[in-house]
Image 1 (cartoon, rainbow, N blue to C red):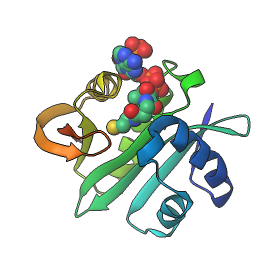
Image 2 (cartoon, rainbow, N blue to C red):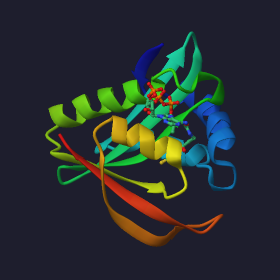
Image 3 (cartoon, protein in one colour):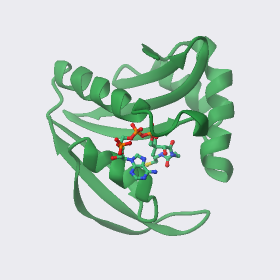
Image 4 (cartoon, rainbow, N blue to C red):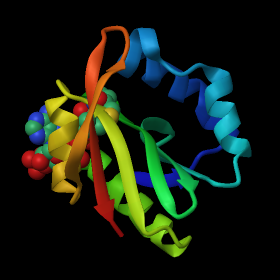
Length: 145
Ligand SMILES: CC(C)(COP(=O)(O)OP(=O)(O)OC[C@H]1O[C@@H](n2cnc3c(N)ncnc32)[C@H](O)[C@@H]1OP(=O)(O)O)[C@@H](O)C(=O)NCCC(=O)NCCS
């Protein structure tokens, strides 16, 4: 497994992975394309051979890195792919001067909450009814860099 910055050629595979992972609320092609154009964003892809098996995305807002996406293909889960993506993301964010990472996660997403806790994030609070399809609370998590 290797980790690369997002490239245009990764996008078709990312769209398929996104559908598998997020269904009705999946990002479309233009959402991924816009990540390529942002100066204040980091977008990492995990690859096995030439297959995109996971990704993590972050936006920098005045030193606070907001993690907007983490996903791993079902066949490659529990092999520390997401952990490797988040570790590399944290290193890069620190190098770019960010002091903190934050994210939101569905309250029912036990796998993701366990992942973020493993990576040093702590629960900060709840955003009531933040998500749609289905409606659900968000847990806000944060980690100092
Ligand atoms: C959440 C997700 C990204 C985890 O990816 P992953 O590559 O399987 O995670 P890792 O293998 O790096 O896990 C690292 C650690 O996190 C925890 N963890 C990850 N998945 C877990 C699960 N299903 N149950 C319990 N703990 C879990 C464990 O502590 C794990 O270490 P261990 O395997 O040694 O016990 C993946 O399940 C996924 O893509 N889910 C669908 C998309 C999603 O929900 N994204 C997050 C949106 S906020």
